[in-house]
Length: 208
Image (cartoon, rainbow, N blue to C red; front, top):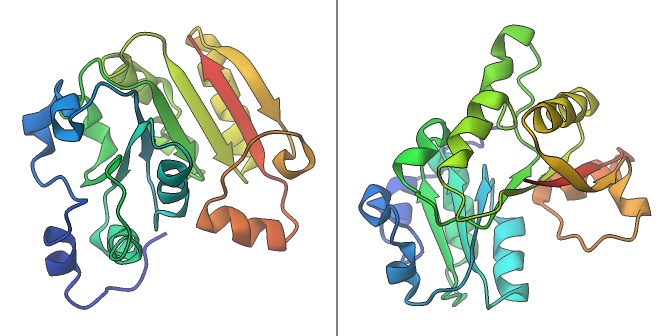
């Protein structure tokens, strides 16, 4: 969901030290950017950044990159980071449909949190867990493939399970109501709202 435009959003984003302005130049060599060989985890569709920022705080030995395609959304994360120093976090304003143009065999884990469900059948190829995207992810994983997905949308969850298993992924963890299960969890901004409304949160962790 898009937020209202923030005055001066582009300038705020461009001036942030967390923003990678030229991600294609780092393809295959993000370890040079982070100046270490730590694993890299990415969140596709990071929203206002609650999840990726908290993950970076909790896991300083892991490098995190958040991807978001809308200025009006990523600027919110940039504003939250203004007074925070997290050397293991970077953000990219980018459309994930061409994600294999900016990464190559260097990602350990992909997080898909409350992605757009694209409810119409004719749009299913736009879902971030569709086979079309799974094929793109193949070239960006470092070795083993690892995806963690959360959603409040039951149909998207069921669709994703089918796509993962048909593509050869195995299920490591699964929950039909995450907040009633014993699973280490960092909440997103949408998740907090859904919990207050009493919605169950579906989660699946898969590997290949």
